[in-house]
Amino acid sequence: MNWHDIPSLMALRAFEAAARHGSFSAAARDLNVTHAAIGQHVRALEDHFGQSLMQRDGRGMSTTAQGRQLADSLSEAFGLIATASTDLLNQTKTRAIRVSLTPSFAANWLMPRIGSFWDTHPDIEVELIPSMQLIDIRRDNIDVAIRYGDGNWAGVHSVPLMPAGHTAVAAPNYLKGCKTNCLADLKGSRWLLDDNRSEERLWVCENGIDLDEENVTYFATGQLSREAALAGLGVTILPAPVAAGHIASGALVKLCEEVDSPVAYHVLIRPEVVNPARDTFVKWLNVQTIENQI
Image: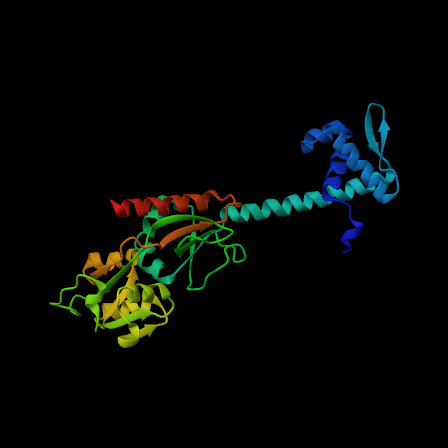
């Protein structure tokens, strides 16, 4: 297709409306522009094609033979565009909400709570997409992303969901009888760390622990390091919201907690997309975090 031969879309819309209404004034009201703007667009098309497309017909306007042929084709083409757009919008309204999040956050925080969303909103389907990869919410057609960091992501609307400072934890029997008042007290422990999270290592190092001199086992995911800690193999570091459930159940004990962490979990959406079902889910997420703090 040679786009250089095709006039502007606005000019074609103006002409189609004028031909359909038989009036520049009615076309102007339809497109919310001025009468003069419609006339200018029609004259621009006539100059482009080198022939007359509309003519006066009493107090109104009518198309020439060539103009009628173009108007009919445009009406059909705009109708196809409108149908395709409506179909796609309807699919968006009825399809599942696509939620991107880390496997650890999905398993430890969201899954124990998602049942309440299903109970109160049975008409809204949620598709969870757990991944350690940093996805592009536009390219991957994601409705909601829950990310861990400082909130400085370009091109998206980011709102803090909950604080997410680090917590050092271990199984109750691992350090039984040992008192820990700070992270430095854990020197000499077996460390079970997620190889993908540099923030955890930085926190340890900032507290005077040289990991090159410690007994450290690195895992490919936070889930594996957490499972190793649950099995009593050593000390791991988890985001506080992920650790909270295990601490409450007694499966893990809190050894040390980061104060005033610069990182948090954030909810990311595309601000240009209107999606009531997505907004309902985001509102529910915020209610869950508020109730969790009470």
